[in-house]
Length: 107
Length: 120
Image: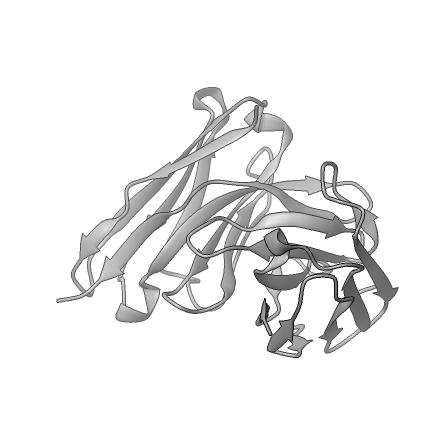
């Protein structure tokens, strides 16, 4: 089975910061990677698919990159609404394995 | 507007059964693969099961294989998860999610979730 890891697990940040979250797969998944944002008590929201494609309606300050085993989610200028937990997810195999999550909180 | 509404959660004893439902609206269910994802209290997301648009392909996480059964009725715009032999570790909020596949697949719409609590 493919395992997903994320770093860091917690990321203290301030409004206006450039924020980067890293996701690694235990084996190559090509570009079969998505990123989600989740706020407490809410369902996850798709941000990025195909590793680097921005989902419709998602602000352009969010971007994704990577291929194979290493991927990044970048928020170019953190906004108050962006404090949340972010999950990567692979769909290369016939399952949707999630990473453990990265919580972006207030520094 | 795409909408997914889960129901059927509740309190059940270990070893018991529960059937979750997900009512879809705003899109044609038969055109999409569907999924169940769960989240234990204070924990991360865990994929549970997937079913293809015409039920041809079905997959389960190892943690639920042999105990849970996913199904769908496209004519009723409904997705189901039959959960048997429930354990304390199955306690979680269960989300249904629509799978969208282009080059790759992602879960582009989610319900609000239904809470399943397994406790004596």
